[in-house]
Image 1 (cartoon, rainbow, N blue to C red):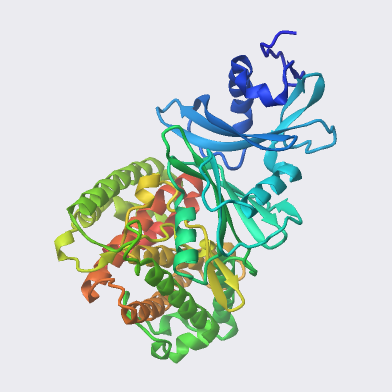
Image 2 (image 1 turned 90 degrees about the vertical axis):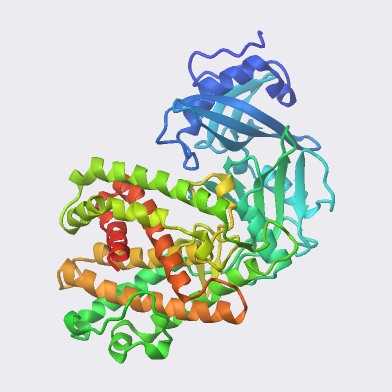
Length: 542
């Protein structure tokens, strides 16, 4: 039998007359495996992020063995090259199984190895692999100098493996639940650097003992051929929760809009408030409390407090340079303007090419966006760092209601990977903490409009008056958040800037976020483009 792996159809198994341990040392096998098998397999995976681009070819950038006694698994680092002249790296662990009944939907390739027929599968589906990884972290030495480095936190002591399972459907990563107590996140798309989720989790948990994020328990890092640490796994405590804050807020808002009819509320007589004011609960008019309920505002207050505490922890470091606060400077200004002007031009092109998909209010707002493009561009250019006195810190970077878990009447902040469109380097740039606040404000705005869109048959009012009521509610929610957040950060001496500076930064970041969202909505669900368009209109007209 030739060692050259040839195949006429994937229903016929590869034949390979050497051991599984020697599999990836055979160049002929690797060549066919990458081109004939993985190209077809990888594009079907939920975690694959290149679906909008044309795959050119896959290279095996690096591989390593994870083995224990007779068990051998491979970790593959795949370099996916695209026709558009860029590439992405993905992590795929593989195993060989001979049991015909095992993981029928997870098979990558039928293969015969040294006379044993079986299948190559994603190793994450194999309990023996999951158990081995857990044990490696649980028994990690303080100093690991091997290629695959396992780290164990001091918070993770004397743990034994009991059970494991996949968490379920996820987009960009795969999470495993161990002992119904811990979550190991395998990063599928990887970068030639430590993942921000790993860095932030470890810093907040081990160094700052921040309680409102899952505790860091351990990690898996790969040292590549350039001696760069690449994070491939993050182990954290599993937080008991009743879902995320997005779903929680949607339920609250649905009741708020139902109250318009139940309480016979006239939208035109609801008292309004100016944007970007600092409010306490006592400042909110009784008519608004009666309409929206006290509970919603109490929860917003708690979330503002937890957000402030996260930023206080991130802004109170004076030893570890990756986390020490920084002032604004010319380098940051150049970086920011280049990033924003490139993104803005991209969004202008998308709006011009897709305006025919819009209707009603969205068309008027899109026309306003195009008519005022020079004004919007000027707002992005008008960033003068010499006028800013606040500090920049490491931030969450992709902060929205879906990244927050609800735990009784409290909140837990998760997923510190950063903005998906950004490079790994950009995700680690120190930013104004108000950028996270702006992200959450945009998320509140989305939640209000999503509630109106998703339940329009249940509310007797027309959409336009519902939008008006929603905008009033948005102002009270964000102003209460701002009042709580600013008081908390000022008391802790976190410098988020003087009053006018805060409003400037907040408006700048809100505009940045809304422009970012616009591209996604026009490409994915044009009916929702009215939400970021309305957000942009609010900012440029106030």
